[in-house]
Image (tube, rainbow, N blue to C red; front, side, top):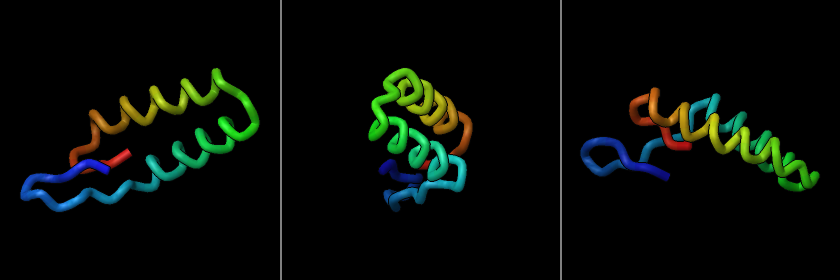
Length: 54
């Protein structure tokens, strides 16, 4: 979890939660390519959303 200015932990947004759930399901199913795609999307999403915690 990341922190927002002032040191408070940031809460994941709906997009982050959906991508994390998709990544976890792909990981459990052994779909490594999809896991990587989700990780990349989470990383990119976190760069564009201030205070977002993937």
